[in-house]
Image 1 (cartoon, protein in one colour):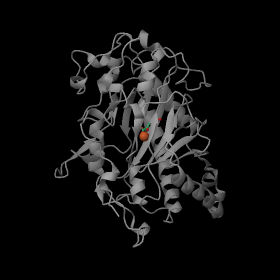
Image 2 (tube, protein in one colour):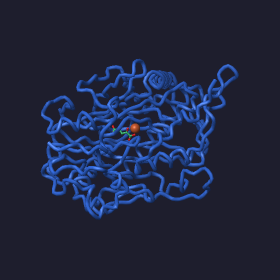
Image 3 (cartoon, helix red, strand yellow):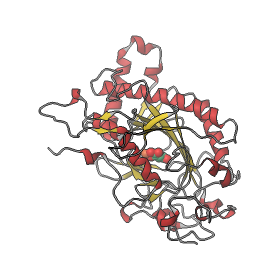
Image 4 (cartoon, helix red, strand yellow):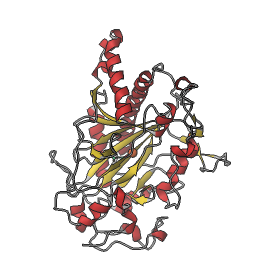
Amino acid sequence: MGEVDPDFIQDPHHRPKLFIIEAEGIPLIDLSPINSPDSITDPKAIEGVVREIGSACKGWGFFQVINHGVQLDKLRNIETAARKFFALPLEEKRKIRRDEKSVLGYYDCERTKNVRDWKEVFDLTVEEPTLVPASPDPEDKEETEWHNRWPEYPPEYRKACEEYAKEIEKLALKLMGLIALSLGLPENSVMGVDDFFNPHGDADFDSEPDPESGSSFDDPDPDYDDDDPDPDSEDDPDPHSEDDPNPEFVSDSDPDPDFDSDSGLDSGSNSDPNSYSTSLGVGPHKDGGALTVLAQDEVGGLEVKRKTDGEWIRVKPTPNAYVINVGDSLQVWSNDIYHSVEHRAMVNSEKKRFSIAYSLKPSHYTLIKPLEELISEENPAKYRPYNWGKFMTHRKLTNFKKLNVENIQIHHFGLSE
Ligand SMILES: O=C(O)CCC(=O)C(=O)O
Ligand SMILES: [Fe+2]
Protein backbone atom coordinates (compact mmCIF):
# COMPACT_ATOMS: atom_id res chain seq x y z
CA MET A 1 0.00 0.00 0.00
CA GLY A 2 1.13 3.53 -0.66
CA GLU A 3 2.81 5.81 1.75
CA VAL A 4 0.64 8.40 3.39
CA ASP A 5 1.38 11.94 2.34
CA PRO A 6 3.33 13.43 5.28
CA ASP A 7 1.00 16.41 5.23
CA PHE A 8 -1.76 14.28 6.74
CA ILE A 9 0.37 12.82 9.49
CA GLN A 10 -0.52 13.86 13.00
CA ASP A 11 2.06 14.25 15.75
CA PRO A 12 2.40 10.93 17.59
CA HIS A 13 0.51 12.19 20.65
CA HIS A 14 -2.47 13.20 18.47
CA ARG A 15 -2.79 9.89 16.66
CA PRO A 16 -5.88 7.80 17.27
CA LYS A 17 -5.60 4.79 19.50
CA LEU A 18 -6.69 1.50 18.08
CA PHE A 19 -9.41 1.08 20.65
CA ILE A 20 -12.43 3.21 21.23
CA ILE A 21 -14.04 4.43 24.41
CA GLU A 22 -17.66 5.27 23.77
CA ALA A 23 -19.30 7.98 25.81
CA GLU A 24 -22.04 7.02 28.14
CA GLY A 25 -21.35 10.17 30.06
CA ILE A 26 -22.00 12.85 27.45
CA PRO A 27 -25.36 14.21 28.53
CA LEU A 28 -28.38 13.66 26.30
CA ILE A 29 -30.87 16.46 26.92
CA ASP A 30 -34.52 16.29 25.96
CA LEU A 31 -35.63 19.73 24.77
CA SER A 32 -39.31 18.87 24.51
CA PRO A 33 -40.21 21.08 27.52
CA ILE A 34 -39.03 24.18 25.67
CA ASN A 35 -40.83 23.22 22.51
CA SER A 36 -44.14 22.46 24.13
CA PRO A 37 -46.89 25.06 24.57
CA ASP A 38 -47.05 24.11 28.29
CA SER A 39 -43.63 25.63 28.89
CA ILE A 40 -45.18 29.09 28.65
CA THR A 41 -47.31 28.37 31.69
CA ASP A 42 -44.84 26.08 33.40
CA PRO A 43 -41.48 27.74 33.92
CA LYS A 44 -40.38 24.76 36.01
CA ALA A 45 -40.20 22.71 32.85
CA ILE A 46 -37.63 25.11 31.45
CA GLU A 47 -35.69 25.29 34.70
CA GLY A 48 -34.96 21.58 34.56
CA VAL A 49 -33.58 21.85 31.02
CA VAL A 50 -31.52 24.91 31.96
CA ARG A 51 -29.96 23.04 34.87
CA GLU A 52 -29.07 20.09 32.66
CA ILE A 53 -27.53 22.38 30.05
CA GLY A 54 -25.51 24.24 32.68
CA SER A 55 -24.13 21.09 34.17
CA ALA A 56 -23.29 19.64 30.73
CA CYS A 57 -21.47 22.84 29.71
CA LYS A 58 -19.48 22.68 32.95
CA GLY A 59 -18.77 18.98 33.04
CA TRP A 60 -18.16 18.20 29.38
CA GLY A 61 -18.42 21.31 27.23
CA PHE A 62 -20.52 18.97 25.07
CA PHE A 63 -24.04 17.56 25.07
CA GLN A 64 -26.56 16.07 22.68
CA VAL A 65 -30.14 17.29 22.27
CA ILE A 66 -33.25 15.45 21.16
CA ASN A 67 -36.76 16.78 20.53
CA HIS A 68 -35.00 19.96 19.43
CA GLY A 69 -37.72 21.17 17.08
CA VAL A 70 -35.62 21.00 13.89
CA GLN A 71 -37.72 19.49 11.14
CA LEU A 72 -36.32 16.14 10.14
CA ASP A 73 -37.14 16.62 6.47
CA LYS A 74 -34.84 19.64 6.36
CA LEU A 75 -31.94 17.49 7.54
CA ARG A 76 -32.82 14.70 5.13
CA ASN A 77 -33.01 17.17 2.23
CA ILE A 78 -29.59 18.63 2.89
CA GLU A 79 -28.04 15.20 3.37
CA THR A 80 -29.44 13.91 0.10
CA ALA A 81 -28.42 17.01 -1.83
CA ALA A 82 -24.94 17.08 -0.28
CA ARG A 83 -24.30 13.43 -1.08
CA LYS A 84 -25.17 14.19 -4.70
CA PHE A 85 -22.84 17.17 -4.67
CA PHE A 86 -19.88 15.30 -3.15
CA ALA A 87 -20.40 12.50 -5.66
CA LEU A 88 -19.70 14.90 -8.56
CA PRO A 89 -16.43 14.64 -10.46
CA LEU A 90 -13.68 16.63 -8.86
CA GLU A 91 -13.51 19.14 -11.74
CA GLU A 92 -17.14 20.03 -11.11
CA LYS A 93 -16.66 20.55 -7.40
CA ARG A 94 -13.53 22.55 -7.95
CA LYS A 95 -15.48 25.10 -9.97
CA ILE A 96 -16.53 26.50 -6.61
CA ARG A 97 -13.31 25.79 -4.80
CA ARG A 98 -12.45 27.91 -1.79
CA ASP A 99 -9.27 29.88 -1.53
CA GLU A 100 -7.83 32.54 0.72
CA LYS A 101 -9.79 35.30 -1.01
CA SER A 102 -13.06 33.49 -1.50
CA VAL A 103 -13.39 31.41 1.62
CA LEU A 104 -16.78 29.78 1.01
CA GLY A 105 -17.51 26.78 -1.20
CA TYR A 106 -15.81 23.47 -1.78
CA TYR A 107 -12.39 22.48 -0.48
CA ASP A 108 -10.40 19.30 -0.22
CA CYS A 109 -7.14 20.33 1.40
CA GLU A 110 -8.26 21.88 4.66
CA ARG A 111 -5.88 21.99 7.56
CA THR A 112 -6.61 21.96 11.26
CA LYS A 113 -3.72 23.34 13.26
CA ASN A 114 -1.34 22.99 10.35
CA VAL A 115 -1.99 19.30 9.66
CA ARG A 116 -4.08 18.28 6.68
CA ASP A 117 -7.53 16.79 7.33
CA TRP A 118 -8.61 13.62 5.55
CA LYS A 119 -11.83 15.11 4.26
CA GLU A 120 -13.59 17.28 1.74
CA VAL A 121 -15.79 20.12 2.80
CA PHE A 122 -18.38 22.63 1.62
CA ASP A 123 -18.72 25.89 3.54
CA LEU A 124 -21.52 28.40 3.47
CA THR A 125 -22.65 31.39 5.45
CA VAL A 126 -26.21 31.91 6.62
CA GLU A 127 -26.27 35.72 6.78
CA GLU A 128 -25.32 36.76 3.28
CA PRO A 129 -23.21 38.68 2.70
CA THR A 130 -21.26 38.34 5.92
CA LEU A 131 -19.09 41.33 6.66
CA VAL A 132 -15.62 40.44 7.96
CA PRO A 133 -12.20 42.08 8.32
CA ALA A 134 -10.14 41.82 5.15
CA SER A 135 -7.12 40.52 7.07
CA PRO A 136 -6.10 39.43 10.56
CA ASP A 137 -3.75 42.41 10.82
CA PRO A 138 -5.03 44.54 13.73
CA GLU A 139 -3.98 47.75 11.95
CA ASP A 140 -5.88 46.90 8.78
CA LYS A 141 -9.37 48.43 9.04
CA GLU A 142 -10.55 47.23 5.64
CA GLU A 143 -13.63 45.03 5.51
CA THR A 144 -14.70 42.49 2.99
CA GLU A 145 -17.81 40.47 2.24
CA TRP A 146 -18.26 36.73 2.20
CA HIS A 147 -20.62 35.45 -0.45
CA ASN A 148 -21.86 31.93 -0.87
CA ARG A 149 -20.96 29.94 -3.95
CA TRP A 150 -23.40 27.36 -5.22
CA PRO A 151 -22.85 24.45 -7.54
CA GLU A 152 -25.04 24.03 -10.62
CA TYR A 153 -25.79 20.48 -9.62
CA PRO A 154 -27.79 19.25 -7.86
CA PRO A 155 -30.30 22.03 -8.56
CA GLU A 156 -32.01 21.62 -5.20
CA TYR A 157 -28.73 22.06 -3.30
CA ARG A 158 -29.01 25.76 -2.53
CA LYS A 159 -32.58 25.61 -1.27
CA ALA A 160 -31.81 22.56 0.88
CA CYS A 161 -28.81 24.32 2.45
CA GLU A 162 -30.60 27.61 3.04
CA GLU A 163 -33.67 26.03 4.59
CA TYR A 164 -31.61 23.77 6.83
CA ALA A 165 -29.35 26.59 7.97
CA LYS A 166 -32.31 28.76 8.98
CA GLU A 167 -33.73 25.94 11.08
CA ILE A 168 -30.41 25.29 12.78
CA GLU A 169 -29.85 28.97 13.41
CA LYS A 170 -33.14 29.06 15.34
CA LEU A 171 -32.03 26.12 17.47
CA ALA A 172 -28.61 27.68 18.08
CA LEU A 173 -30.12 30.98 19.22
CA LYS A 174 -32.60 29.17 21.46
CA LEU A 175 -29.72 27.28 23.04
CA MET A 176 -27.79 30.50 23.58
CA GLY A 177 -30.80 31.81 25.49
CA LEU A 178 -30.91 28.69 27.66
CA ILE A 179 -27.16 28.92 28.26
CA ALA A 180 -27.58 32.57 29.29
CA LEU A 181 -30.22 31.46 31.81
CA SER A 182 -27.89 28.76 33.08
CA LEU A 183 -25.31 31.47 33.86
CA GLY A 184 -27.94 33.48 35.76
CA LEU A 185 -28.40 36.01 32.95
CA PRO A 186 -31.66 36.96 31.21
CA GLU A 187 -32.59 34.61 28.38
CA ASN A 188 -32.49 37.33 25.77
CA SER A 189 -29.33 38.95 27.07
CA VAL A 190 -26.88 39.44 24.27
CA MET A 191 -24.31 37.17 25.90
CA GLY A 192 -21.43 39.34 24.84
CA VAL A 193 -22.52 39.59 21.21
CA ASP A 194 -22.41 43.26 20.18
CA ASP A 195 -25.10 42.77 17.63
CA PHE A 196 -27.66 40.23 18.68
CA PHE A 197 -29.74 40.66 15.57
CA ASN A 198 -26.98 39.99 13.20
CA PRO A 199 -25.25 36.91 14.45
CA HIS A 200 -23.88 34.85 11.67
CA GLY A 201 -23.52 31.22 11.52
CA ASP A 202 -21.75 29.17 8.98
CA ALA A 203 -22.39 25.62 8.16
CA ASP A 204 -19.55 23.43 7.20
CA PHE A 205 -20.15 19.97 5.82
CA ASP A 206 -17.40 17.54 6.19
CA SER A 207 -17.47 14.48 4.11
CA GLU A 208 -14.80 11.96 4.78
CA PRO A 209 -13.75 9.43 2.25
CA ASP A 210 -14.71 5.89 1.73
CA PRO A 211 -11.25 4.42 1.67
CA GLU A 212 -12.35 1.15 0.13
CA SER A 213 -13.46 2.85 -3.04
CA GLY A 214 -10.20 4.73 -3.34
CA SER A 215 -8.88 2.51 -6.08
CA SER A 216 -11.82 3.29 -8.35
CA PHE A 217 -11.19 7.00 -8.43
CA ASP A 218 -10.37 8.27 -11.85
CA ASP A 219 -8.14 10.93 -10.41
CA PRO A 220 -6.36 9.25 -7.58
CA ASP A 221 -4.26 12.21 -6.73
CA PRO A 222 -6.07 15.47 -7.40
CA ASP A 223 -3.87 17.64 -5.26
CA TYR A 224 -0.90 17.27 -7.46
CA ASP A 225 -2.25 18.20 -10.85
CA ASP A 226 0.27 20.21 -12.77
CA ASP A 227 -2.06 23.14 -13.06
CA ASP A 228 -3.18 22.90 -9.51
CA PRO A 229 -3.71 26.33 -7.99
CA ASP A 230 -3.55 24.77 -4.54
CA PRO A 231 -1.51 27.03 -2.28
CA ASP A 232 -0.41 23.94 -0.38
CA SER A 233 1.31 22.23 -3.21
CA GLU A 234 4.63 23.91 -2.79
CA ASP A 235 5.18 22.57 0.63
CA ASP A 236 3.76 19.16 -0.21
CA PRO A 237 6.95 17.23 -0.54
CA ASP A 238 5.65 13.86 -1.51
CA PRO A 239 2.78 13.09 -3.85
CA HIS A 240 0.51 10.19 -2.98
CA SER A 241 1.21 6.97 -4.70
CA GLU A 242 -1.31 5.77 -7.26
CA ASP A 243 -3.26 3.45 -5.04
CA ASP A 244 -3.46 5.74 -2.11
CA PRO A 245 -7.04 6.28 -0.91
CA ASN A 246 -8.03 9.88 -1.33
CA PRO A 247 -10.21 12.27 0.57
CA GLU A 248 -12.96 12.62 -1.97
CA PHE A 249 -15.86 10.93 -3.67
CA VAL A 250 -15.95 10.97 -7.39
CA SER A 251 -18.62 8.49 -8.18
CA ASP A 252 -22.18 7.98 -7.17
CA SER A 253 -21.41 4.42 -6.29
CA ASP A 254 -22.71 3.77 -2.86
CA PRO A 255 -25.10 6.05 -1.09
CA ASP A 256 -25.02 3.84 1.91
CA PRO A 257 -28.36 2.37 2.89
CA ASP A 258 -26.87 0.51 5.80
CA PHE A 259 -27.74 2.17 9.07
CA ASP A 260 -26.11 -0.19 11.53
CA SER A 261 -22.53 0.62 10.87
CA ASP A 262 -20.08 0.63 13.65
CA SER A 263 -17.13 2.86 13.15
CA GLY A 264 -14.20 0.67 12.58
CA LEU A 265 -10.86 2.18 13.25
CA ASP A 266 -9.87 -1.17 14.60
CA SER A 267 -11.85 -3.31 12.19
CA GLY A 268 -8.83 -4.79 10.53
CA SER A 269 -10.25 -4.57 7.03
CA ASN A 270 -8.51 -1.37 6.44
CA SER A 271 -6.78 -1.11 3.09
CA ASP A 272 -4.03 1.06 4.46
CA PRO A 273 -3.80 0.73 8.22
CA ASN A 274 -1.04 3.24 8.32
CA SER A 275 -3.24 6.07 7.15
CA TYR A 276 -5.80 5.42 9.84
CA SER A 277 -3.35 5.29 12.63
CA THR A 278 -1.60 8.50 11.67
CA SER A 279 -4.22 10.77 10.06
CA LEU A 280 -7.56 12.21 11.12
CA GLY A 281 -10.76 13.33 9.36
CA VAL A 282 -10.69 16.51 11.41
CA GLY A 283 -7.66 17.11 13.58
CA PRO A 284 -7.97 17.99 17.26
CA HIS A 285 -9.15 21.56 17.78
CA LYS A 286 -11.44 23.82 19.77
CA ASP A 287 -14.20 25.78 18.06
CA GLY A 288 -13.69 29.53 18.14
CA GLY A 289 -17.31 30.72 17.96
CA ALA A 290 -20.11 30.83 20.52
CA LEU A 291 -21.44 27.32 20.04
CA THR A 292 -21.56 24.58 17.45
CA VAL A 293 -24.55 22.47 16.43
CA LEU A 294 -23.37 19.30 14.73
CA ALA A 295 -25.25 16.60 12.88
CA GLN A 296 -23.10 13.53 12.49
CA ASP A 297 -24.38 10.57 10.54
CA GLU A 298 -24.74 6.99 11.74
CA VAL A 299 -21.12 6.16 10.88
CA GLY A 300 -19.91 8.26 13.80
CA GLY A 301 -16.34 9.18 14.59
CA LEU A 302 -16.57 12.39 16.61
CA GLU A 303 -14.37 12.22 19.70
CA VAL A 304 -14.25 14.57 22.64
CA LYS A 305 -11.42 15.03 25.10
CA ARG A 306 -12.92 14.22 28.48
CA LYS A 307 -12.27 16.99 30.98
CA THR A 308 -11.77 14.71 33.94
CA ASP A 309 -8.88 12.65 32.57
CA GLY A 310 -8.01 13.89 29.07
CA GLU A 311 -9.13 10.60 27.49
CA TRP A 312 -10.61 10.73 23.97
CA ILE A 313 -14.25 9.66 24.16
CA ARG A 314 -16.33 8.79 21.13
CA VAL A 315 -19.75 10.41 20.84
CA LYS A 316 -22.08 7.60 19.91
CA PRO A 317 -24.40 8.68 17.11
CA THR A 318 -27.93 9.07 18.47
CA PRO A 319 -30.72 9.07 15.88
CA ASN A 320 -32.14 12.55 15.28
CA ALA A 321 -29.91 14.15 17.90
CA TYR A 322 -27.65 17.15 17.51
CA VAL A 323 -24.30 17.42 19.23
CA ILE A 324 -23.79 20.82 20.84
CA ASN A 325 -20.49 22.17 22.06
CA VAL A 326 -19.27 25.26 23.85
CA GLY A 327 -17.00 27.44 21.71
CA ASP A 328 -14.07 29.60 22.79
CA SER A 329 -16.15 32.81 22.80
CA LEU A 330 -18.56 31.30 25.30
CA GLN A 331 -15.67 30.15 27.45
CA VAL A 332 -14.39 33.73 27.58
CA TRP A 333 -17.82 35.30 28.18
CA SER A 334 -18.40 32.89 31.04
CA ASN A 335 -14.93 33.69 32.42
CA ASP A 336 -14.08 29.98 32.42
CA ILE A 337 -17.28 28.73 34.10
CA TYR A 338 -17.75 26.79 30.86
CA HIS A 339 -14.98 25.36 28.75
CA SER A 340 -14.47 24.93 25.06
CA VAL A 341 -13.26 21.37 24.79
CA GLU A 342 -10.95 19.80 22.26
CA HIS A 343 -12.50 17.39 19.77
CA ARG A 344 -11.61 15.58 16.56
CA ALA A 345 -13.21 13.31 13.97
CA MET A 346 -11.94 9.90 12.95
CA VAL A 347 -11.63 8.54 9.47
CA ASN A 348 -13.60 5.35 9.15
CA SER A 349 -11.85 2.40 7.59
CA GLU A 350 -14.97 1.11 5.85
CA LYS A 351 -17.46 3.87 5.26
CA LYS A 352 -17.77 7.42 4.20
CA ARG A 353 -18.64 9.63 7.08
CA PHE A 354 -20.77 12.73 6.67
CA SER A 355 -21.24 15.56 9.14
CA ILE A 356 -22.74 19.04 9.11
CA ALA A 357 -21.38 21.55 11.60
CA TYR A 358 -23.16 24.85 12.15
CA SER A 359 -21.16 27.36 14.09
CA LEU A 360 -22.88 30.36 15.71
CA LYS A 361 -20.56 33.32 15.62
CA PRO A 362 -20.76 36.93 16.77
CA SER A 363 -20.66 39.84 14.37
CA HIS A 364 -17.10 40.61 13.40
CA TYR A 365 -16.78 43.86 15.35
CA THR A 366 -17.69 42.16 18.64
CA LEU A 367 -15.14 42.55 21.38
CA ILE A 368 -15.02 39.25 23.25
CA LYS A 369 -14.40 39.59 26.98
CA PRO A 370 -15.67 38.11 30.23
CA LEU A 371 -19.19 39.36 31.01
CA GLU A 372 -19.41 42.06 33.68
CA GLU A 373 -22.10 40.09 35.52
CA LEU A 374 -19.73 37.18 35.96
CA ILE A 375 -16.68 38.95 37.25
CA SER A 376 -16.00 40.46 40.65
CA GLU A 377 -13.09 41.42 42.88
CA GLU A 378 -12.80 37.84 44.08
CA ASN A 379 -13.26 36.48 40.60
CA PRO A 380 -11.50 38.88 38.23
CA ALA A 381 -11.58 38.65 34.45
CA LYS A 382 -9.37 35.85 33.17
CA TYR A 383 -9.04 37.26 29.66
CA ARG A 384 -8.30 40.58 28.10
CA PRO A 385 -10.71 41.70 25.36
CA TYR A 386 -10.06 40.63 21.78
CA ASN A 387 -11.77 41.38 18.51
CA TRP A 388 -13.75 38.45 17.17
CA GLY A 389 -13.30 39.27 13.49
CA LYS A 390 -9.51 39.40 13.72
CA PHE A 391 -9.38 36.18 15.72
CA MET A 392 -11.62 34.41 13.22
CA THR A 393 -9.83 35.65 10.09
CA HIS A 394 -6.54 34.53 11.56
CA ARG A 395 -7.98 31.06 12.13
CA LYS A 396 -9.50 30.96 8.65
CA LEU A 397 -6.16 31.69 7.06
CA THR A 398 -4.66 28.64 8.72
CA ASN A 399 -7.23 26.45 6.94
CA PHE A 400 -5.31 27.17 3.77
CA LYS A 401 -1.70 27.71 4.67
CA LYS A 402 0.75 25.79 6.68
CA LEU A 403 2.11 28.22 9.24
CA ASN A 404 5.12 27.77 11.41
CA VAL A 405 3.44 29.32 14.41
CA GLU A 406 0.71 28.02 16.68
CA ASN A 407 -2.84 28.90 15.60
CA ILE A 408 -4.35 31.76 17.51
CA GLN A 409 -5.95 30.50 20.73
CA ILE A 410 -7.87 32.15 23.56
CA HIS A 411 -5.09 31.41 26.01
CA HIS A 412 -3.06 34.00 24.13
CA PHE A 413 -5.46 36.53 25.68
CA GLY A 414 -5.34 35.00 29.14
CA LEU A 415 -4.52 37.27 32.09
CA SER A 416 -2.36 35.72 34.71
CA GLU A 417 -3.74 35.98 38.21
O1 LIG B 1 -17.09 16.34 11.62
C1 LIG B 1 -17.16 16.43 12.84
O2 LIG B 1 -17.74 15.61 13.55
C2 LIG B 1 -16.48 17.55 13.57
C3 LIG B 1 -16.47 18.84 12.81
C4 LIG B 1 -15.92 19.92 13.67
O3 LIG B 1 -15.40 19.71 14.74
C5 LIG B 1 -16.01 21.32 13.22
O4 LIG B 1 -16.44 21.56 12.07
O5 LIG B 1 -15.66 22.22 14.01
FE1 LIG C 1 -15.08 21.57 15.79
